[in-house]
Length: 144
Image (cartoon, rainbow, N blue to C red; front, top):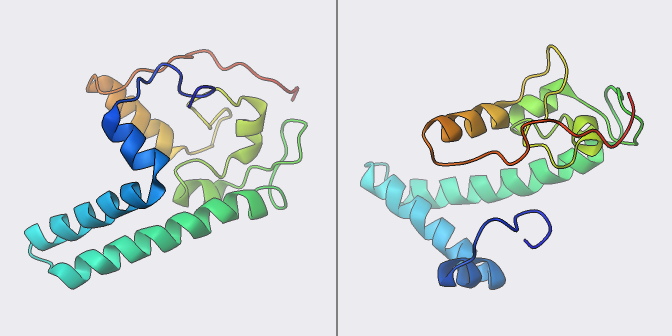
């Protein structure tokens, strides 16, 4: 938090949810179960949604480092790669070589034809005044 999100003030809820990870997990699972139940899908659907989210999150996070350093393009000098299909299902994280080249950038897509769904979400949040981008200019740490 001090290194990458120093401008985000922590409050009591943040400390409770993130310093004690089981609390944050419990809040997230409870939220999903209640929302699915409120939408009429039932409690079992909420539990299934929470389980699916947890499994996909763990699997996709592992895929970023496992696949993202093995297969794909390397436009910048690092061991990471850009794999466009992986970027589509991971919110842009599959553009891992770009991330290594510009680690402080909120945008992973740096070249024509790269799709970055996470950046689209950031742009939407900015347009709704719910987020702010600190670095508009991309600062590359490695050469192309």
